Length: 463
Image 1 (cartoon, rainbow, N blue to C red):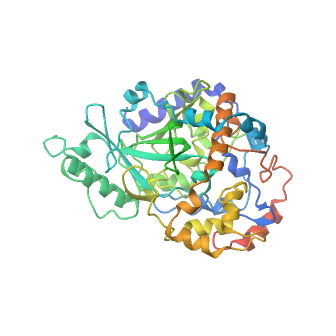
Image 2 (image 1 turned 120 degrees about the horizontal axis):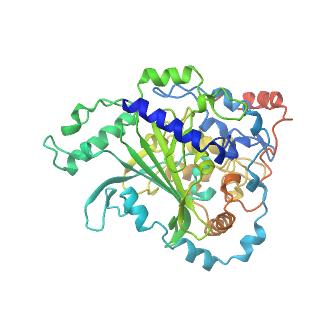
């Protein structure tokens, strides 16, 4: 049996064995997809950043999903109940001193270090080393955070690190050479950002470089963290909220990816709310495959603060964003938004192409839910008019938008802490202070026709 057949057949066997472990088969649809398009008298369209026309070799065109809530029947009622909880009294009961002590405790233990071979011990060039100073091949890079949920001001800091197979760090004789690894990583960055003129070198020279695609064996680690403050600057905490892992196990050709999109593989939903052909095969332990060659799994905080393996439904919640979206590049987000090698650092980055300003003009609170008053008051006046000076500052320094105040960061840290204590992540992982008003509890009775007319007139460039 070749690797491709083995990958998909084993995935199906694991999926069938654990089918009953999942209550919400629509968990791949994230909470922000229930966002109202009219918020506080403003028409908003947060949907455009994900649901767009993909760039080759992403052949998904999802512009229509900006216009309608095309959900399976069982997802017509919003299952994310945590969006509607009032946590103000809980937040007030937890001191800032205690939450800081909590988030400054490292929960990435020796077992996880051994499992993933990453020590989060990065040098100035982003290379990770183990306790003996040996390169692990994991490398961190700075990237521009994706719009909305991934802005730190909305609750979390994060980082992404990449690892290629050993062959990419070897000369023709099989000897380790860091300079060769650098060249091959740089060639990959170019290919992911649309330029495949470079080739892989030395022992990896026989591997075809393809625009927009990672080589088989590529691995990612993505950590999601609380927000700490060091020297009065927001930074990621030592404690992890989540540790997310992805590995590319099967090469897909351009033709195969195009056929997948043309068949609308993910659009035809069965009665249970699963994507067509049960495309997310696997389980939490093995990881779920996304039918595009990648396998995803993750760890999340247990009630005692340690990282535990996600359950099936928690893992399924990762899959929608890493499979059918037009915005992704080979099912991923970060490398397309690469800036430089080295651990995530937003200093010196300006909104040079105006993407953050554009997002603000469509979503004035800087998130999908219309809840970030801090952002709104910074960039708009009470009547909703643009404040020009903050937008000018944003063009030079994205931190003016992306980073929260100390007070906001602590409130959101506390809110998430209580989510950890409750362990009901399948009902939503957003750190919220009070019930969100700008999301639908049910979409069955929505007059989407009227909303669609308004949105089309509001943002013709995207729809």
